[in-house]
Structure formats: C-alpha cells, structure tokens
Length: 369
Image 1 (spheres, rainbow, N blue to C red):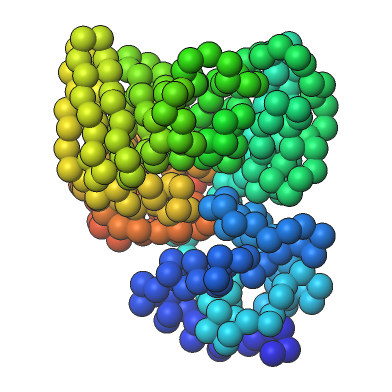
Image 2: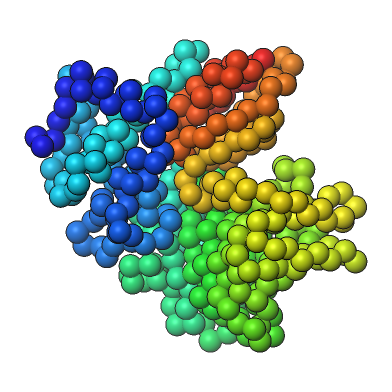
C-alpha cells in the first residue's frame, strides 16, 4: 500500500458507507483481538472503550488532504493489518472527508473528544489529559491509565471530596479508589471521595454515566441523583440524570440494583430500565439496553425519538446551541450513526426522514419543520 488513493477509489469506498456497514467496519478497524491498531509507540495498548475515541483523534491528526489524493502520514499509522481492516480505516477516512453535510450549512462541526476537569477538595482545578485513556484514583496518588502521574495534586492523609466534570463535547473514564470504573458522558459531573472509608461507598451524579461497580458485599455502592438513589453490591448499569431531561432513567445490563425514591423502592433485573416519574413513582420497563449504552459505545442510536430529545444529545456532544424556528418538527426519528461523525453527517441522516431541516451557522444549529 502506498498510503494514498485516487478520487475514483474514494468514490468506490463511498458505496460501502452507503450500504450501512460504516459503524461495524469502523469498530473492526480500530480493534483487533482487544488491542488498538492505532497507538502511540510510547504508550501501552489501551483496552477500555474510550480508546476508540483516542484513536480517532490520533487518526485525524495523521491525515492530510489535497484535491486529488488522501495522504497518510507514515509515522503515525500501523499498516500491518489484514486487508479488510486497512480498507475499513480507509472507509472511515473517506466518510469523514466526503460524507455530505446539509445543503443549508456553511460550515461543519467536529465531534467531541476525550477530556475532563478534576476539582480537588481545596478547590484546585486540574485539566485532565485528553490524550490519555482515563484516570485512576488511588489512596497514594492520581495517575492516568498508562501509569503516569496526574500533575498538580498533592496527597492528603484525610479523605476529601473530588469532582470530575466533563464539559459539553467531552467524555472521560475514571477508576475510583475501590476499583469501580465510571464512564462520564458529556456535560456531566461525578462527586466522589478520594478514599472510601464509610460503611457505604457513596457518589453523586449529575448528567449521565455508566458504572462497572467493583464487588464488595460489606460496602454497598450508592449513586445519588436528583430525586433518587441507586444501591448496588457489584454490577453494571447506566444512569441518565440530566436536568433538562423529563425523567431520570437507570438501565441495568448486569447484576441487580435497588432504586429508592422517598418511600418507593424497586429492584431492577438485567434488561430493565427504571424511570423516575414526577411525584417519586418508579416505573419499570423492559428495553433494549443497546439504546442506553449507545453513547458509551461511541454511537448515536435513535428509536422513535422526538426532535427535542435528539437535539439534546447533539447539543451536549457537539457543544452547540440549538435554535428552533417556527413549529417544532413532529416526526419520530430513528437511525444509527457514529459519534465520531461531524455534526453535518448526523443532521443529514435526520433530514432523510423528511421531518426536519437544519442550518448550521458557526456553533448554532437552526431547526425547522
């Protein structure tokens, strides 16, 4: 492979994208036997889900374009791949470059990236390195997943309250002092102690996060959100508790959890979602957990979503302002698209329903019927 291709070859690859295999090929291109294909020579292979986001950023930095060819900078990409995987990387590049944005846009907006801010007990704010795949909190220090220490914080013999905050357009992965792993979605905040010393392991969440809780029968893990708390011993679940959503939802993928709101209490089983309704009632429904897990798997999956629900997701991930002009579109939207896509690709997919039209101006998206 000479690390470039013609426009005609790019056009051929576009047919693959249009056939609907884009997401699957992209997933395969970035991972093989659990290891990242795109990696920094000085950093150990990453295994967590955020590694795809890191690899995407590196891939984009490794690409330059001219009018005739796509050029791949030699030193950044490992081309010792099966031909199918190499072709899949080309699919990604082509989709990123050529996938059409809405005709009413004069610009496009790139997807969010890995990043967060850590606020210490003394109020000091530390910008966490977005090129790292996550942060680990231990009783001795704060370090990134690759073993390097987080610069800035000084250790304390006493437990103090930390806050991990993701802005709109960011997501991040944390490992708490007990070994629990937390993936924070955009525009979210997790408050947690620097060490768990009480009979219960208590954290507070605003926004959305996926939890993979370390098992400890003697010390229940409790997540507090607005209006409810979720109690577990060791399990995996997602909580969506954004202030601009109509309800707080808890989706269980493994184990069991107990949801409490006032005097109301419910037990969730895998494949179920608890919805905290007004007045504190908790409704239990059977759902496809892939819908709730889509963001963590770097995808948007819409299934009969109204336009406001869809655009709230877009607003958080792309860090944009959404403005509705005229009557709200009343169509129900469905579809699947990578969160690695520029916002124009997402909006173009939504426009194919015929139920809405979009105009991009700077970091503002105008929505009309």
